[in-house]
Image 1 (cartoon, rainbow, N blue to C red):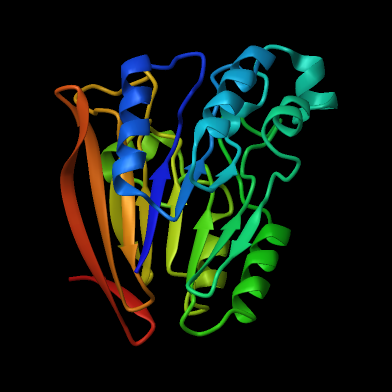
Image 2 (cartoon, rainbow, N blue to C red; image 1 turned 90 degrees about the horizontal axis):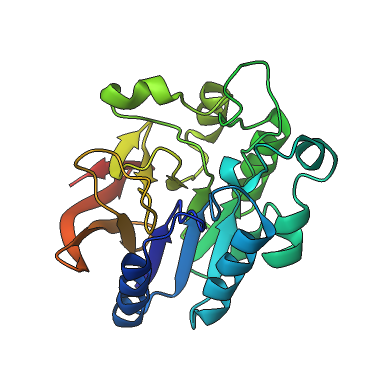
Length: 264
C-alpha cells in the first residue's frame, strides 16, 4: 500500500521551530515512501531562507518531491524577480521547476503555477497554462491503468465557499475539463493555509495547510496530510498540531467506481 506525506507552505523565515521538530518526529514515525511539498518553501525567497530550507531537506531520510510557490519568487527585489526569478531555487533546491516521478504504483506530476507577473494586482495568484494542461494530459494517456495519478501544484483548484475570495488557479476550468475522465486521481496543493479534501468531477482535491510557519489563519492549526491506498481505494488523514505534537484530526476514505472517485 502506497503511503505519501503531503506538506506545504513551510515558509522558512517564519518557521515555528518546535513545529518543525514535531514534523521531523512524525516523519520518522509514519515512514512515508515519499514526502510531497506543494510550494512556498520560503517567505521572502532570500538566499538565507533558501539555505535553511535546503538544510531541512538534506536532513530528511525520505525521498521528497517538491514544486515552487509564489513566495519562492522575490517580492521586493524586482530586478531578480524579472531577470532571474528562480536563481535561488535552482541553486539551493533543485534545477527542475516541474519534476516528474513514477513508480509501478503511482506517478507524480509537478507543475509550476507561480508567475512573476500577471494582468491583475495580486501577483501571488497562480495559473496553469494550456501547454501545462497538454503536458499533463499526455502523460496520463501513457500511464498504466492501475497506476495512481497525482498532480502537484501550489495554487488551489477548489476552495470552500468561505475562502473563495482567495481566488482559484487561473485556467482551472480548462484544466479540469481536460483532466476529467483521463485517469487523474488527485490534485495536491497548498497556498491558502487551510486543509481539506473534496471530490470534484470525480477527482480528489487534497489541500494541505501551512505545515510549519506562524502564518496561521484564526482557529486553523499547522497541519499535514497522509495519503494511503491504491487506484481503487484511498484514505486521506489530516494531522493537526495540538498540545506539542501532530495528532490525527480527521480521516476520509474514497473509493473509485467507473473511473470516478467518491467519498465512502
